[in-house]
Picture 1 (tube, rainbow, N blue to C red):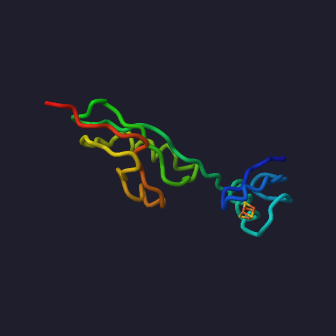
Picture 2: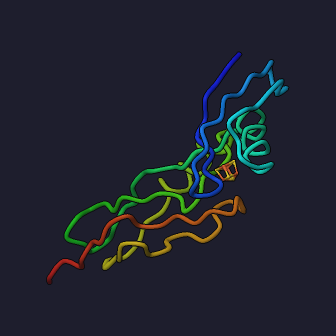
Picture 3: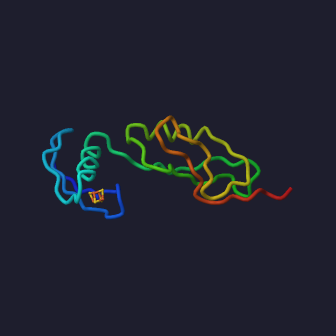
Length: 122
Ligand code: SF4
């Protein structure tokens, strides 16, 4: 099998061409450094993805606030993270960039708000 990836480890964004069989990497080209090679290997054995979703807001001008993980998490744990997000409820106001859950499930990523939700006037 062959896949193309953009290495996200540093701003160079090298375009990686990876050949693999199952979870075994056969070759990797396009990487300018060893970290790109390791990144390609992790994409084959344990791909990572960012999670985006929304969280319930109490007392806000909107009932939901959009959120994302501050870093990609293992694809194998994405639905566990979504379950956590769906069980969360926060009080308004919520600021864009606010950490709503630190180190979700010990995966090394926070759940952060991607927009502001002001408190509703009473
Ligand atoms: S391969 Fe190395 S230089 Fe290229 S984007 Fe990845 S970390 Fe940066």
